[in-house]
Amino acid sequence: MKKYTSLTEIQGKLAQKQLTLNELLAYYLDQIDKHQHLNAFNEVFFSSARKQAEVVQAKLDRGQAGKLAGMVIGIKDNICYQDHIVTASSKMLESFVAPYSSTVVKRLLAEDAIIIGRLNCDEFAMGGSNETSYFGTVKNAADEERVAGGSSGGSAVAVQADMCLAALGTDTGGSVRQPAAFCGNIGFKPTYGRISRYGVIAYASSFDQVGTLTSSVSDAALLLEVLAGADENDSTVASIPVPSYTTSLTTSSGKKKIAVLRETVESEALDQETKNEILKAIEKIKADGHDVVEVSFDLLDYLVPTYYILTTAEASSNLSRYDGVHYGYRNTQAQSLNQLYKSSRAEGFGEEVKRRIMLGTFVLSAGYYDAYYQKAQKVRRLIREKVVALLQDCDVLISPVAPTPAFKIGENVQDPLVMYMADIYTVLASLAGIPAVALPLGNNQQGLPLSIQLMAKHFDEETLLSLSHSFLEKA
Image (cartoon, rainbow, N blue to C red; front, side):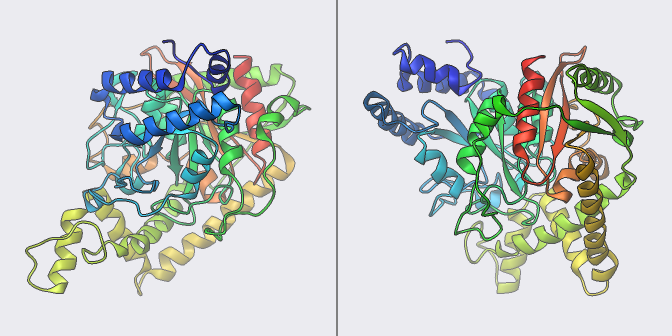
């Protein structure tokens, strides 16, 4: 069976009776088996996926199937699916069974998607290479000695290696966009508050956002259409109406004013081949008739420090519930309650998670709260205001996604500062809460995927998707 790159293609085959859902699911299960060594899946949902395929096939036969009928999708292992294990790729939750489904899972199933399994990720979504997972490193299908990116590395590789049509990830500071860039996918992060976080294991609650990894912009648009919208279980979700993103891909008209963030493209840290491809892409956008200008963003040096102060503080708070008492991993040798807490957390969490909890506890402590946490909140406000001002004068911002293509496994994981600085281009959209997308730009001379990032105004996903669709259609 050939690789399908869009749901439209699959639904056409299903409608013409050239394909059944059982055959499609069998194909993806076979692909997962062939690519086990990539370590993308923490678990394959054989039983529930087959049952769902039978139910949806019956609906298709009656002409009553939902929008996502024919979409075989994986979910990151921090998204709850009732009666299925969810671990956040941590020993702390090694055997935890979700007692309820997240809103995004409910919406996928309501539109007849087939959820094929849970995908490997950095532990509690903390990492940029998928090397902090309790279940081991995910390997990049383009070069198995290289990382898949993180934290949604399993999601990116599952789509890259054709183990499912699409995947859900979560993006706190680039965790959908960076692995998408490393694996040659389309990684879409919507506006903060566009999609419900209910039932998603929290890392940093004012940043976390569910995103998508797909091979086509049309699938990203359709998934956003299904997943977006108000949710009574999540007070941070915007109640504004959800437009027809799929319709706007082809009906959105007019040329856009696009701003290139000068400091990001001119940075000495940016890989030369990546820079060359981005400059070519900018010329192509100009040739399409869009007005492209260069703008300065003088707060670039403050992005990573601000992001890590705030997210580690929120992680310290969110992960305090994993104490060896309520649920999750528990040390059985402890002789006192205090020892139980200490031992359970020390043994249940990995090194990177412990590092971030400690950093967050430090910046929230009485002597340092004003000096670090409060100051970072003020800088975040400045960053947001600067971004909003730039987007009042233009429609879209352009920057790289990552400073380099996928790096080798083990190359950076021992140096946290190097790992954290790899987020320098993606955390801007996260701090400002705006939508952003990573788009593939082909491969470099070593065969490694390259990428470009587009960002738009709050809740202007339509412009972002339309421009992305047009850009890739003409590629």
